[in-house]
Image (cartoon, rainbow, N blue to C red):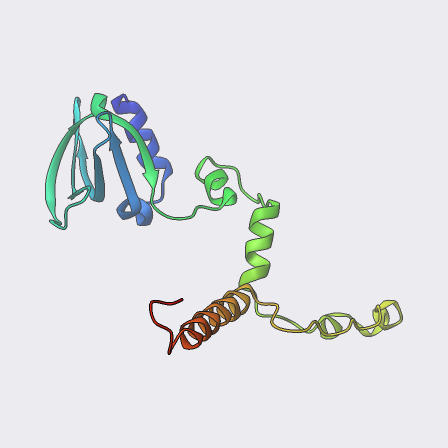
Length: 162
């Protein structure tokens, strides 16, 4: 990677995300960036830590040609990436679904105005069980634990599990 490329990429990524950047090196080593100190003509100076190490706050002088690529170590929405490149107002289906999942469940009847009351569809039957993905996962886990305990409890009194 060239100096101009590194400077350009760090310029596109908001500074608050710099501590979430990993530099992947050509030899597949990795450096987790804490803060970029400066860009020199042949290398970048930064503070961070190496992959697999808990030693934080180390200084690194990384030649640009050793950097294979950058990686943001978090889930990044497509709209965020587009905004890094100057495209604003972009909302894709993924972003809309994530935004809808983050919103608390609202009463659809409360959102309709009085003029639209005649167009409101009849209420649907309430589904059995939870509809929240977290609640479903929790319920599935509890069922597995109960089944495992039942299997262990049923095997008591037997020798060797036979």
